[in-house]
Length: 615
Image (cartoon, rainbow, N blue to C red; front, side, top):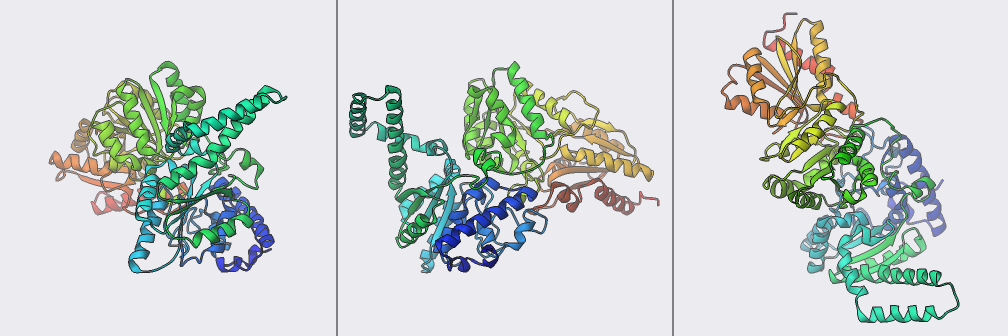
């Protein structure tokens, strides 16, 4: 095998084209083998194998800077930069990250898990080289989907203005660039409205109409001709007007074209953009046919909280025509693909543009509709200003579905949703909730439709379950699950089930713990908290989020405001302030001591310290 001889990018420079093609096949085979077992981003990485080979063949990495946007395309890059053997531990705890990571390799410049970032990074790297007087290449690899993010356009604009020495590789793997890059539409309109363009088009149609062929086929050929002109002219004009020298589009799988083209372009100075066309899922027929399904591969077929939300929101939308749904390039992941199929005229996918998603929701809400915005917790961070300014300040009725809240597992630190409690609870007018189980999620969706405030509902990336005791949701009211005498555990969302396990363990030791299902992150059930302070000396809060500014902090702040901290002790249990690693979700729960056994052990130590433990 050729792959066994590849320990660094220097090794591939000694290969001929035939050997490089065989190497690409071997890399694809390895990616499919590993991802089928470990999960991961399959389709994009399969589509970028030749591109990664060509870039390392032409660049002098790591002296030259190669920056991947998001990192979904980077598996081949990892394999040929000394991580072939460790690739078998992809996304495992203490194994190999699913994204580029500088702690793993000097060939990775940034941790890249969010889209639309690479061109800004490359601009900074190139300008740093200019200031320091160092002459090296800086290349950013960007998928066409990332161009829907405003940060990409801002970076392209500044790069063109400064005439920075940056090469942007636009890896285009969609059917139509106009779909992925909405801003090109105005240039498209400009081109097709030019007199010369329309004169050629009209004369061609007249000419074809006199030929002895079926008119329908001729019309189709004319349409294809028009689309071909648009596809060739529009992207070039767009990027040229931003100050880039545009090259392409070229076949991103043809190494005999890619390598000499890259060598020539790298000799040039200033902003350059090479447009390559690739096929997602290349080499695996199932992934080629259905790239969205194989974007992030997993063999799990469990009913998740996302599935519960998906079915419930469609059910509610059938009864209430005001409900519309919005997502940011995640219809399948959030479960809104079912809504999109059922109500296509009431569904909006804005692409990788979370800020625009929230701004759009504000406009829809202003005119009496009820937008349901489903975005992963980690990506909702990107729309923080819009949540505050566009929605909460206006007190508009927008429902935020915060999927993947808490630990997300193998995608790691770029994707864990551990900050949303802290960054949302400070916002006026916003009501925030977390369901203890799947039935409560359904009830919270119904509740959110009834109140006037904007609402956020967070839930984990986890198999859905039912804990029992289904009760009506009332505004700012917690739920008593179990009475107690010795201490009280106030648990939020996903950790309610762990609280019930802790209670069972404590009960065996003669400790009677009360269990409260908080339900509301904001506003708190202040009446309930006062009652707890009058009954218990120790109150424990549980949350699957960072402790700083989190739910426990809200409880602590309330007791401080009420001058009750001298009377009671508040123990907060959650995630310490750091970026958690990648591992299976259940492993992370145990690693951060949020499982029932670990919480039980920590509470035993606390009780001994407080002299309440008699054994």
